[in-house]
Length: 257
Image (cartoon, rainbow, N blue to C red; front, side, top):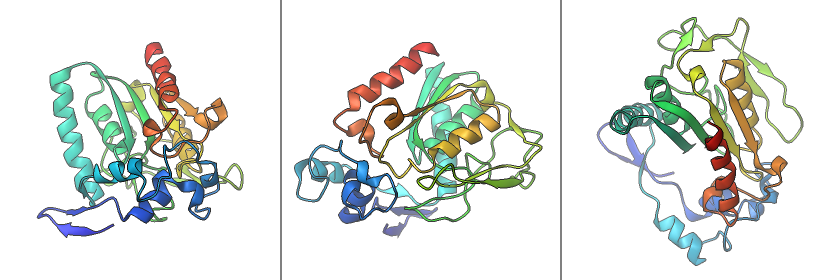
């Protein structure tokens, strides 16, 4: 990812075409960077540079704020202001924006009726490959404060964690809260749906996010697409060949909530 100075924080790009293909659009041929990568079949076209679908997707990408803290705070404020204008609503977040959705729900719990998280930022308390293994998301779901009881502290210094072993060799270990567990206050009032593609880099760890949400008091449903018979999807599944089938799965949840 390349960066350029932008005053406050830095702007970067999504990355070179080869990396974008390996992570998002053609994981089947990325050399097995995660166990489920080989299952990717739903991207339209080759997923590589020179294919018109990939080239159109790559041209559509815009600069992004590479400082997670600035990006989270600015987006949380902006979307909360939008929710104030719109009124009662549902939030659908994807990827890096998962933390933004959680922050908005925490800031506007009386207006957000449900949150749909499409492979949200995570897993709790850490990055995972292909983006490293550094500590992150000090508040479990976010880098910046969300409401817990008892209070987590201004820098989450009162949250203690423990590692839970992975469920099998194809999944990552999970970092959870140690007992006694602090429960979410505002977000615990909002039902959630987490959606995970079978072949995505999120497949090894989204179950940790769901497990954590349940630990901290959220009513959450996990649409683990491969287990539900919806196969072959990567991280950009809403752009893939079976996207209508996935949209119908999300809509069924929205109808119930």
